[in-house]
Amino acid sequence: MDSSCGYRRQMESGRTRIVRAAALLAFLAISAAQCFAQAASDSLQKDQQKALDNFVHQARQYIAMERKLPADKLKPTTDVAELERERVALRQAMQQARPNAKQGDFFTPPVAAVFRQLLAQTMSGPEGVKIRASLAHAEPGAPAPLVVNQIYPDGKGQPLQSVPPTLLLNLPVLPKGLEYRIAGKTLALRDADANLVVDLLPNALP
Amino acid sequence: MTRLAVALLLSLSPLACFVPCRAQTAAAAAQPASPELRFPLKNGSVRWAVIGDNGTGSEPEQAIANQMQRYWNVVHFDFVTMDGDNIYYGHKPSDFQKKFELPYKALLDEGVKFYACLGNHDDPQLEENYKPFNMGGNRYYTFRKGDVEFFVLDSNYMDPPQLAWLADKLKNSNAGWKIAYFHHPLFTDARFHGPDVDLRKQLMPLFVEYGVNVVWSGHEHVYEHLKPQDGIDFFLEGSSGELRFHNLRQPDDLDILGFDTDRTFMLVQVSGNQLDFQVVAASGQIVDSGSLTRQKAPAQTTTSN
Image (cartoon, rainbow over all chains, first blue to last red; front, side, top):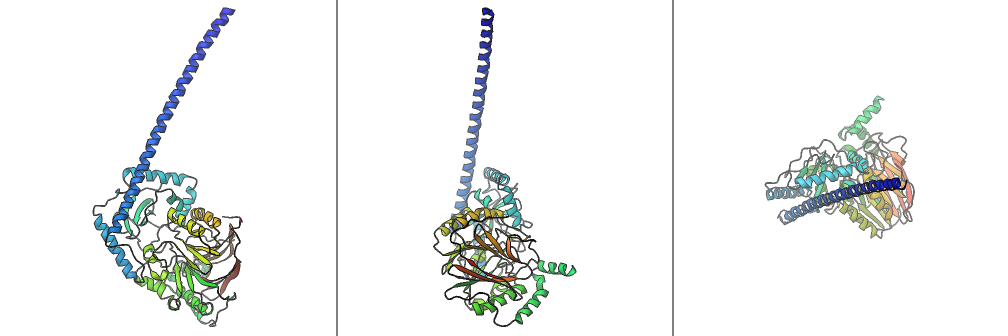
């Protein structure tokens, strides 16, 4: 009886140890996987932040370059023709300053990936419904085709699509003189003073 | 039914309003020189007119401008606030002439100042630098008249710097009356666009926290005096050139009074704790009038919609 009991205890003790060891191994494996995932995630976030920092830096450099041009920003006047002349002069000066400008100069592949992710997150988040309503509310019309380093088209007096504030709160803040604009699903970077398409990101909005 | 359909079609196009507006202009011309004013003019008061969605350059805009001139002879308002869509479609020098300088020539000649905000049909860079709009080269700005400070916002692009600027300006304002105006409405019973709820989410907390008294907007081509929202009074004046005939939903639960069958403009007077207003149609009909008492502190009433 006693020996049988002792044997059973030994057997149970052995099983318990095996179970404990297995549990420990599983715990260690899960912890290691979690650590690895966290590290990967941290690394991705750092990469994303770096991409956004580069984007903002580039935007600031663009505005700094524009301010150095002899054709400066518009000054208040009653003469609309003069305002238009100044704007055209500024646009042409910026076009000449960036003769090789092309799509993706600012929205580089890493920046584009982060922007698409940010926009998707924002649009699918709790404020998504309000943002979509705000976009629909603003008389969007059919977007005119955008071309980098060309005039931001106003078509035949087509209204400017307003940008929902919550969307702007979730994108990097631009220096004064540059702004985001939405045309259909495209996110454009617009030089406000020169009315120029600086860069564009197609299929930015989900 | 056919007449209603024709009226609806006519109201949809800014250029197609020729027939009814001719009649309105004729009606206005037949009116007595001294128009009816439903509030007493007070010495030292701040007086202004409000227009919105006006810049069509078509006859209805002129009809409203004529009514404004008639009332200016009595009220001598100093300035006009513009709720946006100041210049529709083209923005050539001739457009600024046709859609602004000519319709309001008589008022401009009297030295009446116009303070514009940007609508979605405006050309931001040209208009903020167009001196007669008094925007000083800015998308958003403030100006003060007596005890009234106006916060003029760009609702096309409400970015974080503008929100931070607004919070700072409101916080540091010592004006007795704080009035905000911008193009896109936070509340409306008009059906074409509806309210901008995303904009509302960002602006209402600031308006409530810093005690904005009255808000004006446009965008919808109707007139509305809305029920107070979170203790703030709201007007929508977007029919001073454009009009969306019968565009208010019925029942228009948010409105104290809505009007969508003629173009309108508003007259406003602030004196002490009281704001008087009167709404005049292109035909000369007085559409609405009343007085508001300044809120002592941001009240807490319910927000609907």
